[in-house]
Every structure is written in structure tokens, then in C-alpha cells.
Image (cartoon, rainbow, N blue to C red; front, side, top):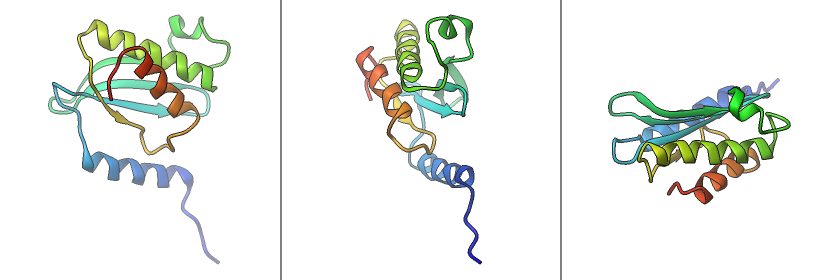
Length: 122
């Protein structure tokens, strides 16, 4: 019988392969996205020092109060605008997008598009 690897293990392997190709610098940090079944998280990370510069998630009260559900495309789009506004306030204009091994469609694409519309360049 052929056994399949779990989707989570496949995603982690994809993410590790992607991380070998790029990393965030001080001039162009990495916008890392993680999505669970119930929430989404976004961080802007400077990998040279290992610091998180800006973060946002659907767990925060300020974000949660603005959205109806925390695990749909609308919530992802709102999170994209929030992370972009916070990044621009800190003086970050260009980033490298790290989709975290997730497929670029649905919530991940909505977050990326909203961040672009709010002023981030990637």
C-alpha cells in the first residue's frame, strides 16, 4: 500500500525549499504569511539579524473587531492592509513575499493583493 505524506509535511518541505532561495535583508525584509484553520498571521522579518520588524494577525482585538470571521478571504484582505500600513509607518516600502509553502490562491493571494494596494511593493 502506498502511503502519502501529510499535507502539513509537504507544505513545510515546500517552505524550506523556498527559504533556500531568498531571505529578508534590512533593505528588503521578508513578509512571511502563515495560515491556520482559524486564523492568519503575517510578519515582516529581517533575516540578517533575526528580528521581527512588524507583525499582525487576526487574533488581535483591533483586527478581530473589524472583521466578521477570522478565517476567510475578507479577513485575509483586511490583514494585508493592516500589515502594509504598519510597515509603511515603520518606513518599510519593499518586501520579499514568503507564502510559507501555501498555494498562491484564495486567502494568501487576497492578503498579498491587499498589501500591494495599501502601498507595499513586491
